[in-house]
Length: 240
Length: 104
Image: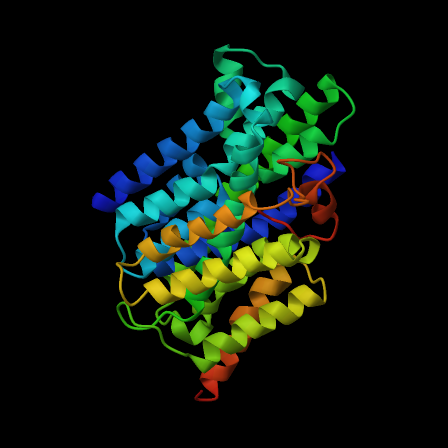
């Protein structure tokens, strides 16, 4: 329960940042709030509005968001057994809440009833906090005339850095190689391809993960005690 | 209007991806190749997003913006010091705004 509240506060900060960045990118506050309420997976949302801000191809932006959102499929596979909601409305609603944080908290529980409670509480607290703070950030930014003067253009990179950091800190040489190659590919392709496409191209750097022994990857996708659960404690790893 | 359509479509796609996980046969999780690729994709994408957004210029050009890079450096410093998420973001914006106010 206390974990859920802590996550709610940390995610609220990200929600403010998302509302701010979304309006700075050209979304209306209504569009920003819709995105937080229904897309409800932070990294994908930030990726999509990044492409919108750059005036890029919306299709490429959407594909990038979906690629980032595909890790939620892995979380769902893990959660299906733990939560044990087979079919019906409950599973359909629960699916909306399958993200980094809810997965980490649910997988850290010892049995099914507490996993269900942890998942539901985190989902409710985090979801309402995320949507509400998106609205606040969006409305506040709408009243700001000069985005650049407030330094808001560095908010996007800072958020992605905060999301990537726990993985880099824990990862080995190959983790850095994949990240470096991804960044290099995207930069090299930026002058040549429409905005959004270079980031998609960068996903191919992940193929390196298929070479050699399996990487010791942390995170709720593989390990119940992974980054979500431990990172919340120090307020990092907000990767909804 | 186009933007609304893209937002609705992407939201629907993201939901289906989540639902597919809950509903799929869990054999898929045992496929080591799928799992290895899928866990590495966010690494590459996040790094690409950082690079592209930090060095974004006019149109498709890349550009060095000292104030913006200062903000990114501040974010790195905050992360090294294990600062909470909010501090990381505020530090980046504050340093960029400060440098810009100084005319950089």
